[in-house]
Length: 103
Image (cartoon, rainbow, N blue to C red; front, top):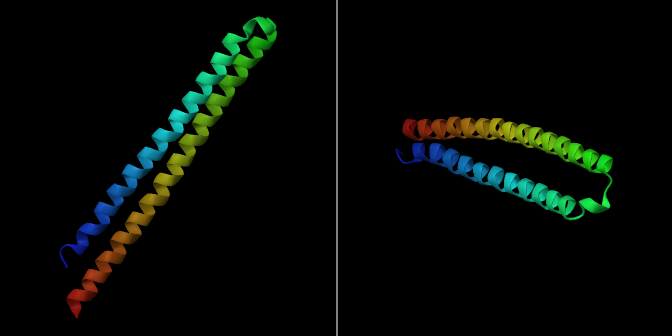
């Protein structure tokens, strides 16, 4: 039964690693999308009026800020959910071990 009590922390660590991987992938895709947009604008800037270029730049900055906040909030919510799940799992496993010892 001693090994059973190790499962919850190990699972929690595994979940944290997976979550970090998801965050890194999302941020990488976001960065690639902005790089592509900037490359397109720079390549075609002669076809755009200066005011349109300014508006595009401002829009990209706003979208980036909003996406950053959204991803940050999603990650925070995921942290809380996973933390609660790990806590519940700790309690459940602890209760199961306690029940086994009592039998």
